[in-house]
Image (cartoon, rainbow, N blue to C red; front, side, top):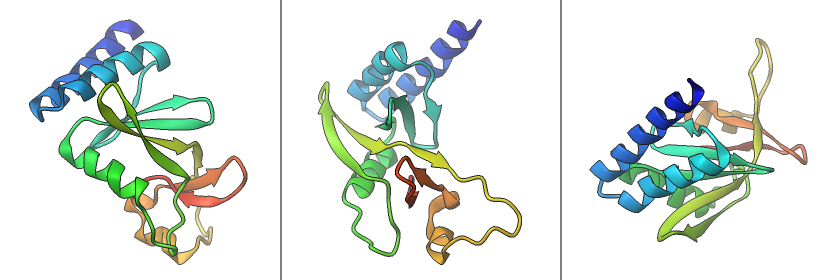
Length: 135
């Protein structure tokens, strides 16, 4: 049953990539799903967990721009998890250090910059830094 669900999710992501004329990205999502299992599916990217890093593969043009924006992030007011663009099978993917998402509890005080992060997607790196992991 789990395999059928995974195949369905990956198939839908690959189809979305093809609709955006991003066929190689759809193929890469399929390849990574066979290596790393079911991705975390965001609005514009599929995210695979690999050891102490994540791999963000876009399945639409907005996802490509998101990868570029994060790889070229320079705003010192919003710390971002370390990341870099890499080429794989004719695709540009974002490799980012793994972050443990912060589950905000009532009354917890966070720095003001966290309010500027999309959906307050912030958390702690393995070395204890509070960072954004999605802009």
